[in-house]
Length: 281
Ligand code: KIV
Image (cartoon, rainbow, N blue to C red; front, side, top):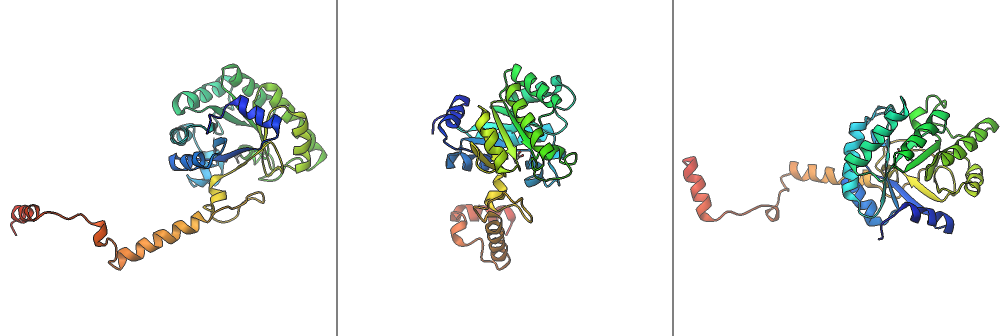
């Protein structure tokens, strides 16, 4: 597959060819996404939940995200790699936001960073990061890093006030210089309206038809346990398959079936004799 670039993503928006994005948090996940031919891989801060076991995305640190991002970068060759900047790593100032974003590019090899929110201060961060030469993906609608301020993990843009805010933020993020926008958990009608006006690609998650789609890898594989959001479609049963495989291994070890002869090395008579002699038996 040819290298995915920003002009290519923009071209896809213009031609109506859907953009495919999926999250990944490690080397094998990135390899699988690459082999499947996705356009963009997002090292999401959802990794805080799906791989680190936190109850929200807020807890993950920049250093932890950098470890995940480096592994994903090493697993990708042509997909465009976007890294979430975690909560607390951009909030203080534009300077902090630029310094954090530079780390993702220099230390992890990210192609771009993703920033949640469309308030005035967030737009200022986007402008500063773009001015530093780092491509930015915006993220509005349901923004999990500030879900408490939004009243919980709930769909946005369903009331007049919320829809107006969404439009204001979308236009603001584009004007601030983001090259792409993730919109999460908003009514499809609002996405359609924004899609017709914005020139940058809109990647939807729970936002209906958009210029592209993103899903959390562990949700689509069926690894995530318990409740998943309404917008999640499960394409695999890897969680159950993994439990089944480990259960089979556990049973075979306990029953003395594994390892069988085909999984063992053989020594020559000399080696066995030498070992006996060394042991004095
Ligand atoms: O962290 C993440 O996985 C995300 C996607 C849900 C868009 O931000």
